[in-house]
Image 1 (cartoon, helix red, strand yellow):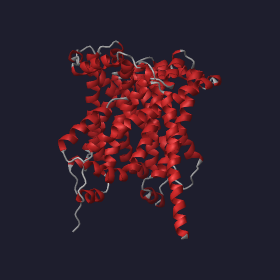
Image 2 (cartoon, chains in turn cyan, brown; image 1 turned 135 degrees about the vertical axis):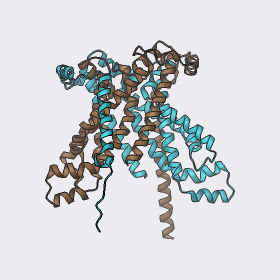
Image 3 (tube, each protein chain N blue to C red; image 1 turned 30 degrees about the horizontal axis):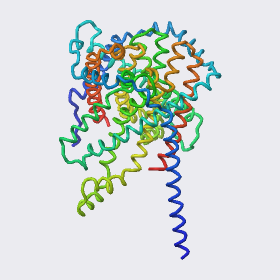
Image 4 (cartoon, each protein chain N blue to C red; image 1 turned 90 degrees about the vertical axis):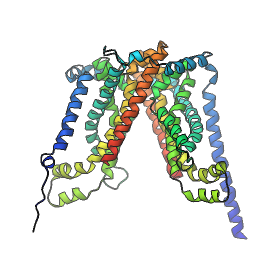
Length: 262
Length: 268
């Protein structure tokens, strides 16, 4: 006896799919209204955009020598910021790891703080730190330190949670205390991951640091803003090319090192 | 005896290797520290951070909603709308880029895929604020410029993630269709797209989370959303206003991350 499979009404007329699709279309239309999307104007003014691109296509090569120093400053900011952020992140990540700290309450508080820090966008932190410490690369270093702290502590505690429990139990059985446990059982297992994540965060920070200067937090972003304000798009093009070269080099070096580590 | 000397030399070379890396790291850090002078910190730093902390704990509740369209709720909604629409447009634009950049054969260098990857890297590195400023020149200040900036900038990351999921997809269905006589477009529509769609959607949601964060700062250059009043409040030092906006952004980002995370778990 063959039984023909029957479909319910909802399945037959794809009610769920149609409902999701309708909701989605309504959302697209609603958001388009809310943000004032006007593609007629966009295509009418597209000529201006093309003119801008044409100006950018003629880089002002003489500007190159002026750009080198601020780009190096950007890398220095990213390096120090990432290092400070990492150093602060290490104790926090140990406290947030499920297999080290059994106290649910303490872990919950630490994770809540980390989640809060991660919600803050980098440029917003930059604006705050420029107001606190004044215009200059120090504001950028603080921004990147906080920014990388949020990111790296999450990566670190997730790495700690994946370690092999064996060495931990062995040390515990031999009577080691918490500090000894972390130093002799946890750190040797996660060290390579830590270095790899540090390099990854450094890559992201180099990218992020190139625009921080736009709000006065040092580095190449200061020059970026100046060239855009003066409508010197040839200089903007040089700066963007410089950023591209640096990001590619840093990404390449960091990727090679990370592949060798893991 | 001989073996011992071998192990000794290898031990020594290992020790020198450590030393080598240590020296390199030390040199890099010395160079790094000389570049950033920590002397330029303003004397008022402590006072300002205290007033910021005071502002954050005493937010300006009146700003939350006043019906003018320039309040926190309307601007946050506008920010989410910018991120949503930008990510949506970007996801559509990313699909052709992904097929361009995906490497489906074995060779390490392939003109089509390598050029596609290069273009995606270029888009990814082009700073989003510069894009926003360029679009402001074309369509005027406002959230539409922000939508355009998000939609172009996101192609860099979405295209890369999409192309990776095409590279790693299961070729079974498309091979089955080809062997039963399906042409290229039929294979694409009935085998390739259905296979990669869940992953595409999941990556798009993930990118939407990032877009909400970046949309909230695009306003700092005049591209709409909550960024404009935030920068204004920081510059005029109205810390209670800054406090309420920070709270708004934190709550929004946390909520969006939670909703999107739940949806992504159901997708994959």
